[in-house]
Image (cartoon, rainbow, N blue to C red):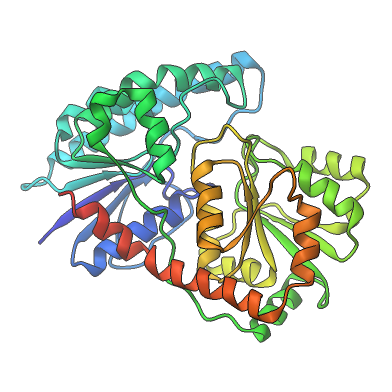
Length: 389
């Protein structure tokens, strides 16, 4: 029987995209008759059968919001904890008579590079971020990412293939690690579940369950609050538009809800925003996406990672408004599944045009989303990954 281990420290944690991503990969692999193990730090989330769970205790891995010294201390503890987790993983991997394929979904660069030769040419690796520079949320994070180029080279060199989510991410990554490793890096779509059939009745039910107004338009910001996301365009647009409201749903990351509340108060738009400050589990996701008219995901221009939220929106046939990573903006533009914010195309203009959109234009966007969702589903992503085996 074919076996594969997905290494994802955050796979059982109630924050970030690791759970959704690991579940998507594992479910698709199971359909291909693989026995799938998910190896991660223990947490509250559970996977459906036949996925096999392998859990370990480790240092709590949530971002530190303290002083620079506290962040540095937390960072060293995280590297040490990641190293200990990998030592246990090496033992687990070695317990198999025939070595299973390994898929490193998320990881800490330095600790993985220390152990990576033990898995040489028997693993795939996914890099969700290729921004190895100082354009980060803090000097500490920037220094760490800049130094991470060295272990990243080692990880890529010893892999069967390493993957990123887009051509421009690949170009940026190769620039960071060197042209000699270009053939080792491929780009794959960011997967999502197969598209669901959503009708108007479902939207009304979801709005009612969330306590939303029936005849009001809603923007949805979904996922972890982060400093590399842009919120100013939303604040300014809500100041001038009366018939739109903003749903924020997700846990805190390196940005707090108190910071958001402070900005809402400054712009005098508190009454236009509904907050759901928690990790949204799989079974709750449909409630938020079907209640929304548009999903909005704006990143700062220097970001070079994908948006799991923008991909998840495909499943619920919801158009998106994006800004930031070139792969994300090109994807939305070329596939005609939403709007890209530009200097001449402000959020206010986009929202007003959406209100006036003809039914045939709206239906065309939905058909584009539905087609793309089927083409870039998790089964397709896994088949693409395994084609290099």
